[in-house]
Amino acid sequence: MYNERRERIRALLTEKPFISIKELQSMFPDVSGMTLRRDIEFFESQGEAIKVRGGARSMKFITTSTDDAITTRMQENVASKEKIARRAAEFLETGRSIFIDSGSTLQRIVPYVPNERFTFTTTNPMAALELCKIGLPAVNIVGGKLDRDYQTVTGMHAMRFLSDINIDIAFLSPSGLSLKSGFTGGNYSECELKRVVVDKARLVVLLLDASKIDKSLPYTFCHLDQVHIIITDAPLPEDIAREAKRLGVRVLDVREDLD
Image 1 (cartoon, helix red, strand yellow):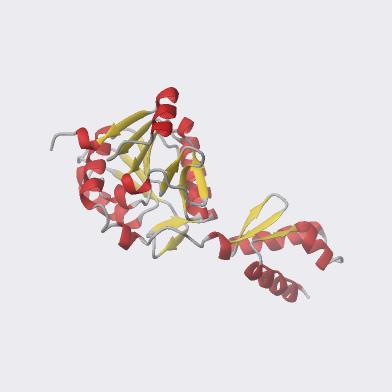
Image 2: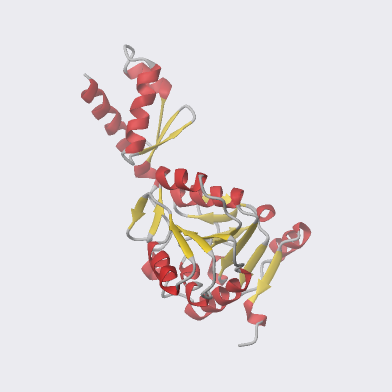
């Protein structure tokens, strides 16, 4: 039966990180591949899976994150994050389409946004509300699944929303940076979204405090050759600094700024 088949597929999605079309065809030999693909699209619409080539990935496994919750991160390295955010605000340009992600450092950029005509897009509902209070900036909030712990919007609806948005300047905050892995995070869906943003943006600005340097998390969203500016509060390891210089990446150390 139709409902019974979907219940069996749902059970698989709770047990396995990936199910293939071939696997489903062997389970349901009397059902067409087109129908099975529609089943996958159904679970994607319900936020239970992401359709990928050859099958589907289970959101149960994808949304597991190794990042700390935003409430914890907001209380860490406060002074450094404040300096980094203040420096980043210098790269805001009026009349541009600007993306701000949900990192704890980026939440601190809002007080430094002047009351001028910017167009912001963000995955952070709290940041969107604070940006609206400024007055003149226009604010788009990405639609999708809201993660209450990380105060960010992710998922396929968010990806579709971003596909229709042009991004000129992107401010992103990774959870880790290493030469081998690049810029990484612990949440698959959030990193997939950041990857889309990096591909779209003309200018990519990465904000990271010392705790993120020489650290790798499970999912990479970009590498040094895709970044234009890094703002940090500590020297980069020699191998990363050398590669950044070779690629023409501008590295700004806020410790050198005068208070």
